[in-house]
Amino acid sequence: MPPNIIAVGAVEENEGPTSRVMFEFDNVSVVQLDNYANDGYLKDFDLNDDYPITNPLLVKCKDFVRNIYKYDTLPPSKEPSEFKKERNLLMVNTQPIYFDKDKFEIRNDAEVALNKVLELLNKYPKLIIEIGSHTDSRASDAYNLELSDNRAKASIAWFVNKGIDPSRVFGKGYGETQLVNKCSNGVECTENEHKLNRRTEFVIVNPEVLKY
Image (cartoon, rainbow, N blue to C red; front, top):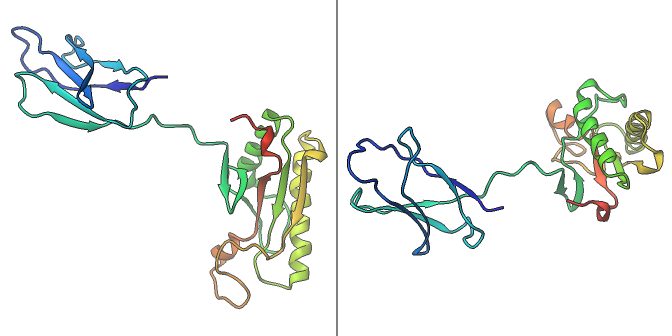
């Protein structure tokens, strides 16, 4: 779809012939406006596909101003992607869900992220997701591995209870082996920093089924 440009400029005096406003890409005229909206402002217009929106746009008005004003056109804003690349993994583009210390119960504040993942599982019927669960570095390695496994199981159970086939969501507990910050054994960290490691993330196993 061609980009849409909105030209805005107030007409303070409207006696005499209408000024012609010329829009150019690389010294090639692409659009000219000979009339204005009823409120005295220039109107919006469409560009054709031959002129990339990354090129500079020149706006000229003969006998009106001596200067040529140059504007850089910007691409249209995009909706946030459903997926993101993080640590060389394709994941659902949402925040991880977090857990209280030494707990594996799903918290109420996890509902937003879980529902987004659920929506994608319903949208892409062949999508398979690995639920990767983690802990902070406190406690022993063995304890944290078991705790993270329980967090993964709790997350899987949430989706199964929503009607998702268990074959499409499988979990793995990583314990404290994949910390997202410096808070490894013996490093002094705040509680909030430790919290960032007590998480479950949603990794796409078979991205080839996605059509996006």
